[in-house]
Image 1 (cartoon, rainbow, N blue to C red):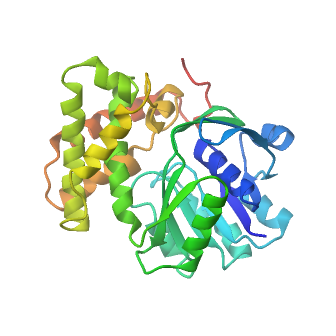
Image 2 (tube, rainbow, N blue to C red):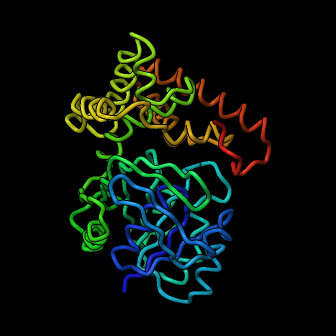
Image 3 (tube, rainbow, N blue to C red):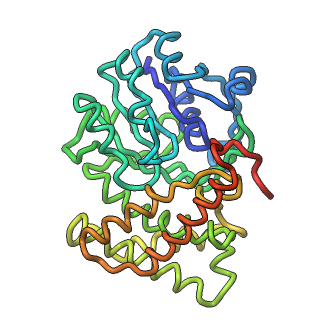
Length: 333
């Protein structure tokens, strides 16, 4: 039986814990703030795609506890935490006990943004690293309940880019067996940038406007052009980083069509959810890295830079209001 450790049981971590549990894997979830509720009641998934289900994986309070208490080899260590490059210690360091107890484990990164893989590659050069991009809009409505809609599309590939790896294919097969829709790519970074076209646009725009994506497009005759212009800037940076032909306007069309297909009021991006809950936002991984790379490659992106400056200030203000907060605040509205 395939053994899986999930680190980060927010909405995405819980969703894919269920998918892998449904596929027959032995799943251990590391839970901190929601440990008691998860231990007693398990998790509930309310999904327009997968249906409504309650499941009970094994629950551990920490990675150390999971590695010691279960005392088993983990085939996959899956990181679903928020991506904060400047956090100390960072998630790459925090999973060390699991890798020490399972030196052959494959590390799977289901996180937003770009540039997230390098810390893991540096610390664990002998481990296979799978980078994953998911299109699975979901919200954690209570410590042990999530609501999910629209899609369970899951794009995976090795890091660094390489030829086909059987461990990548096996993981994709498990996701498909559990009800997901997994696709494998030799160079997952192209898919990361394609998703970033939406993520680095809607996350800051929705956080600053307090509108969901469909609401924003309906709020002003200038809204669509605003979103398109930001997306085009991100495409330009992506081409500078990945090379000619890696990205084109089809990525913009695909993301806008996806938004247009949604029912009112649309999707609440993760940074907007964090902002409304008084939590720290993934400003650097989702949009700051785009700005850094644009400057490195001498690409002008004035709209994206403005959004980054404003959303960074908003994130700073939230942290000043709730100093030392881990983000476990009651969601507003």
